[in-house]
Image (cartoon, rainbow, N blue to C red; front, side):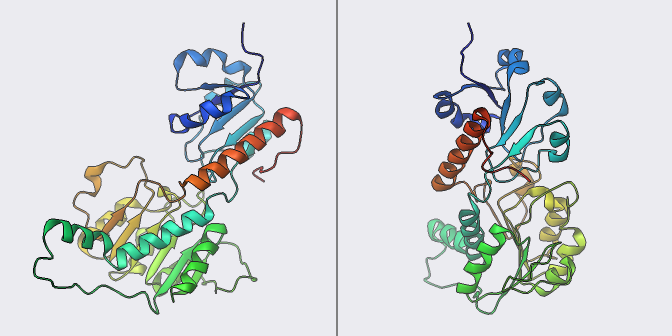
Length: 310
């Protein structure tokens, strides 16, 4: 006889760590176990990581589905209007990791401009044997451009103020209450920035918004930082410009394909790469777990969802 607790499915192995805590209150089944798919028709909730696309066939196989609970902040893999049309609510983790993602962005900037990773390798390899010191670039009076001025973009800008950077930003929506000026266009922002940080929410309409032309505006002395989504950048154009020197450098936490193939970056100079960890801290994950539980409890209890995607 099946468990009487509400049945929910966990969509991705990446979220395997939520199975045990959720199983204390729900019958939580991993979707990646083939035999569990026999019970898809019973499930009312699907827990997902927002960067992964949900196939329509999966939704069709879950006729009782009433909630897609996105563990992460981003939900670009979910066709929200299509779900809404089917009467399926979507929730996410709001701005649970905004401060931590901003910390990571600043860390990438500091690591690249001050050559911290290069310096570490030099010490470990014996390259510092003569006691010489390499000159690195100061952040003082540097122009920082931020693409996307939501909670993460604003958190980056606040930190940039303390680091003596001059911040400007661009996004499709004007925000007159912000203290940082908005550029006329993305191209203008890239042209006028020494460092360009991508903090925008990804959606179907802005794929590869950081195009070859935008990268060229940033130029051979510019640094491109991405802690948003890999699909926002034309990655092939980025790699080509790093290899031939038309772009000064890149610091990336996200990629078109994840995990990104190591060989793709083997001969790409002036880069710092991290494995999509900008928002993955102990505090952020704990907050996301709390939000997920709150949304599940509200859904099954007939209450108001605390963090719906609107």
